[in-house]
Amino acid sequence: MNNFNYIDIKNLLPTEKFSEKRVQSLISTISEAGIWTIPICIESDSHAIMDGHHRWESAKRLGFSKIPCLKISYDKVKVISRRKDYIVTPEVIINAALSNNLLPYKTTRHIFAFKIPQINIELKFLL
Image 1: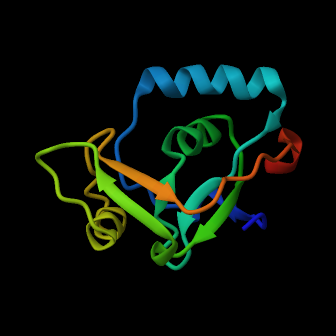
Image 2: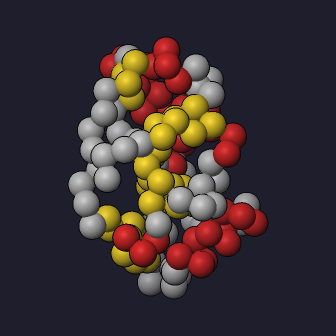
């Protein structure tokens, strides 16, 4: 599961809202490091973001055209709700992405059966 693809940032679909404070912090961290270190995890068919909403939003604001992503099928992921008032399933999450009716911040937690690989991509390759 160490293979990632560069995916056009416009083709990625968010599923949840994000924290503006966290995005601002990540923009600084990414810019200072000069490298991209963690691929965004996306559902293989829909390109719904499973993990990496803050990195995706930061990349958009930094003007990147593509992002390293791992394409993953939901049959390799366990998903749970972080909120007692929400039941989440892969279908609910993908529907949120496709309809742009985003779930609240920190609603879902994706548990992967493998370790997300560390990468080192110079930012110039993402422009």
